[in-house]
Image 1 (tube, rainbow, N blue to C red):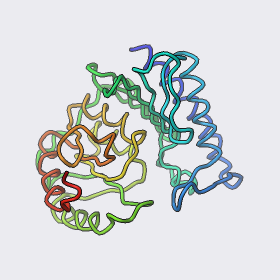
Image 2 (cartoon, helix red, strand yellow; image 1 turned 180 degrees about the vertical axis):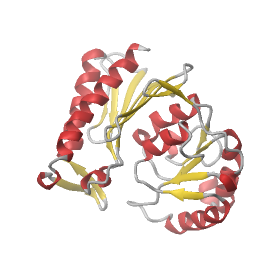
Image 3 (cartoon, rainbow, N blue to C red; image 1 turned 60 degrees about the vertical axis):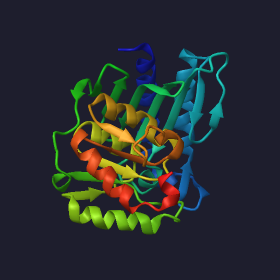
Length: 268
């Protein structure tokens, strides 16, 4: 296992302990809103601080891009950057819904090299190193063998902050409801992407995500034999925040159906 992946796992497990302890006392939790429907808790901040401390102790020169504290330049090594979501699914966490995760990725330039998505509720640890495959609790994972969109279970996420695309979402959702086996919207994109990687979903789509929602899950999917892109079928999803992913056979018809619904402004 790559040393950087080991450190990322250590950091994720530390954050998981903080989150699990806090989940026992949700009534005592201090919650504030960054924007409407976009919540942050003292747990997000404590988990992020623990992750950053662990990562910087081992790699003091690497940069940081984290959801709560923003971007920090590396001390001398600008090529490497950790991309961190300390608690993806904060709204679920606040409500006691056990669907949230810690996401940590290591980027070298524009390439994601290492990935960890840790679900502290189920103690499920998804990991990947570029070129070395994807794993769930050290067992190799692959995307599902599903080949037909109409037999596929598709994950998604609806707008909760920015609602300018809500009609577009509903139009795509309506069409997919008729052309798939079903859709799910559990509320933590990093886990949704991990579920594509391990075959629980056959595809996934969402707009307006942040780099820390996507970075680790994207490497999991590609290392598990799946495909992931932006809305143009290209690899700019960290910049655009728009993601379509799936098994090799499901990805193409899923992307095509979404593309056909897009307004000109989103087609690029």
